[in-house]
Length: 328
Image (cartoon, rainbow, N blue to C red):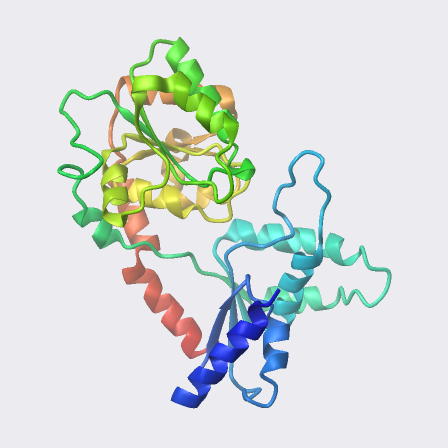
């Protein structure tokens, strides 16, 4: 809650050192109205403000028994009203937010200002997060701390997301148990971390998987992480919640073949021609596709990597951000 105070103090230092900015870019984690209020009189009202919505606190899935708290969702909404322009990281995110927003505001019997929703939608655009495609391509998959892939090694299945409820790790571990029971030969790498305690399901799954595990946990060195991505044959997501999917996108850019839910933001990451091969509709379809891909592993097709490079490489997306900030 002290974020606006700290950011206002830092902004004053920058204003004293460099003068007023041409534009201001803030993320959804900032309480924009509070921050602007603390800098009243120090920032000209003509300075454009771009709000980047990488997440939102309204459509995040609740755990069983958890009650909704609309405090942070309202901060998101008030920040949108205060911004000159709103940027979402995917079409799915934009649609999900504006679909749920009227229901949020109708919780309040008066002064809900539903009429402002269309104005917020009108100043919203979609710009994806970029990835460093060149650095991923330059990363080596051998002679790293992760080890060197042998020519005859079993195919490597990768899961590289936060160790949290919304990524539905139980469904992923159920898939691995089924693959083991079916006698499918594979290795597994589980990257990512939990910022509090390691969930028990991760500890139990690691024990069950035994020698199949080639890596487990956070990779602190970025080059070693990219090397792990380049070793992967398959990258799998079982997420309940995803507004973009940068970890999966980087794995695909590194050459891993994706198996992703046919929902959320994932269809936007994959060209339509590859949806039948890369997207699944239910767990049975995921299992069938995983068995097929692990028994005859092939890297991500060139058309997929070309699509990623054309639409998500910072070499392309940075110019789009420049244009937006130059004339929001």
